[in-house]
Length: 307
Image 1 (cartoon, rainbow, N blue to C red):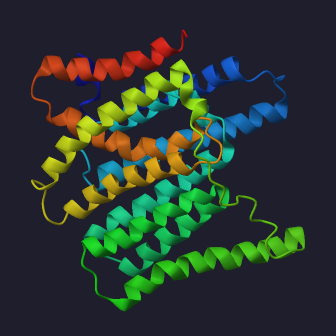
Image 2: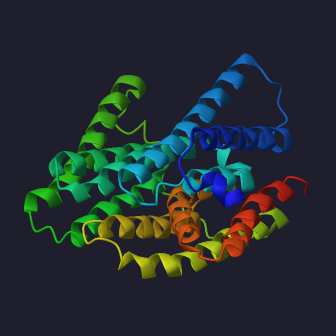
């Protein structure tokens, strides 16, 4: 019954996702924030909610436009449930904005399969990843996806290999120009420095243990079938599926490198992981197991709200 609601793209699914995302924001501020609600506080968090929801819409667009799932809405439901499972992901404005720009970069990379406007897409992808890195430095790791994509398409054009670096250079030059105007210095705008921390003690809380276990166990299991089924896809679509897989690995690396491990760093993992798990749900033949699998992902975040 649950799977029948989300196995096709329907307007009601976007409404459900809207309220799950809103609940994630409400839960976080009720449980973790003790500040008076002022007009500026309300406006700031309304903007963050808007960016978060638009990110979900962007994910839906990327998936539908590039046939990364079978026209279901599982990926956006999973993404919103991940937010609810780890509401700390709505706590960091820099990561929320960085993740949004990373999704814009995804969109341009994955659309390379059409081989139309390749130069523009490569430049745009690098540009968006560069913007994301201004908000959160380690988002720059997603630039590797461009290199991987060119390798997957066995692109031997020197121009195509140089264009992404031009996109990054453009962001750098624009940033320096703004920094000179606003901060009267060349590098005043670069507030996000490449710090690293391997201290995972903050994840010792029950909430983190349960949710991280769920994400990684379900993600690993789904990834096995995801990789297996890539070979059955049309040749033109395979690089897009591999890009999603490598995006998960990069999201995992960001979690490892994150200087402040407060849960918000998991946001970079949610989009590609949601696509992989959505693909697995779609190929489950046993209806009872499909219902059980999705039910666990739905129930666990709500149970964790009680702890």
